[in-house]
Image (cartoon, rainbow, N blue to C red; front, side, top):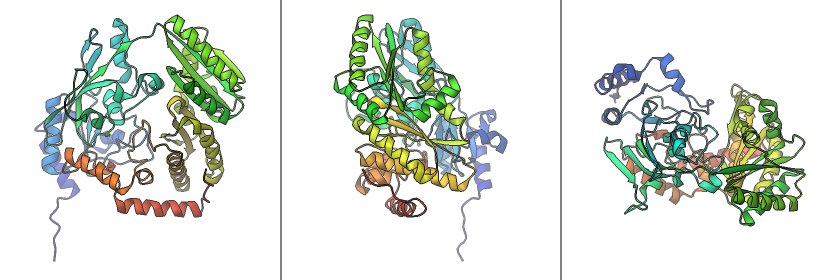
Length: 494
């Protein structure tokens, strides 16, 4: 008779805790349920799992020690930053360790001449701009969660923000990263020079969701703060007309600092929460910002106004001062908490589509609300076609959760059908893992797995967020067919 010689969960926990205490102080190790419970999920709380333990190293050497212990014992590791991920990317594993980088929060240096800042991964996004402000500089990527999200998490997910259209995503604003492999080896990615020899491994690391290495230091690019910024607020009677206006602005050769779109349900939710001054009677609104010198901004605002009038905007306003500009932006930045006031839970989806298809997809999503019996608010980084539908549901109701998951998967499938992708800036995590089967063929997924194995041969880093297998994709396809037949009839194709 075969005897299972694998250690039990309690034995493994005891061995792990004993080994960790030889690498970091015991006060930086959490194992009691009440201490690990805050780490059981990220900002997607419908998926929860208590880990074996949580380690909070305070420096790079301690991170190395923790990783070497986990490698020796075969314990999976889930790196975690601020816990603001919206796709379940930091969800723990039942038999794994959460490696929190929250204590690595030093600003290493700011070089105003080179326009760079070197920081540890636990530094919050907004802190970088705060320390650069005395030099007239700032860090451009600005996710809505920038007061809480960390630069390490931004790197893991390739975060964007309201101004990513003009200034780029995280991948465009990081020059160098220092990281530790699962073996405990120190790796250097990128360079402070304009270009680095060899393969562009930094671009592979950014957006890898903690599956390749654990980042311990990051050098970001800083840019001069614009002298002037003004915001245009336009409203429309039809979502498709608003979508056409977005495409027309870009088509006219105008690259605004930010170009955001919200539909009427999102506008009404935000107004009830922050009173930003939006037109609640509009089917959709656009927020279009121009920055630069006073002359540049005046000229660009005039050109934007012409395009909006040509596309039948019902109302066009320009911020009169900085207070009004920030007030209008506060509405968009508070779209997620506004949604949180309307339902116990929400999925903040994250797909991308061609700009010309914005209105078409919004109308399809409206039809899906009836099919799945759930409400959906829509906010967009419209300038680059990155949409964030907010599906409202009650996670305590198993049927509502099932319908919400199917609703989200359907939206992502439509994104791919329109020539887009299943994620723009939130990452895949748990939420979109099965949807990768919709976008990527088996050969592509095998290539992704090969890259993962090159960095992490034992597959211990964020192990359950790996690329889905052929068998899993086949199972997902069957589930989608079932969902499309009963109780969710399929929606006509575009």
